[in-house]
Length: 122
Image (cartoon, rainbow, N blue to C red; front, side):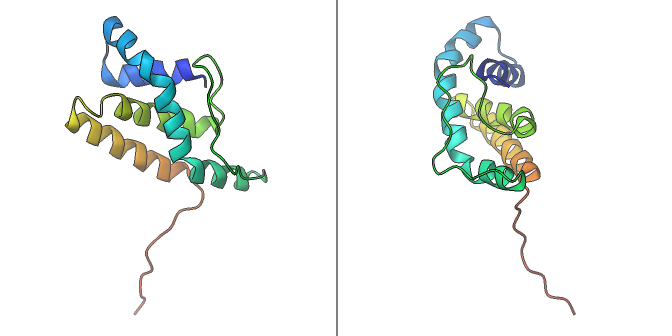
């Protein structure tokens, strides 16, 4: 998935028209790089599950035309929600909270290393 594809999916989630598309596009690359940095733990968990070396620093996207350097399934399922949330964080708190919750829930689903609370058995 390229940065532009992820951005288009985020714009679909926000129901943005062309003028909104151009406004938000200037922030998309920085927001995608922030998502990559925030998701380093999950990216490394997926890399480890695929017998790949974990990354020491988060991957970085240099252009929206480039492929986002992360697991394709996680990108398609999670990143549009996270990107949409970051793009509207100052404008609409209710949509930001919903999109952020969706992003977190979907990210938990895609990360193979989940932590669960210990339950006592009686």
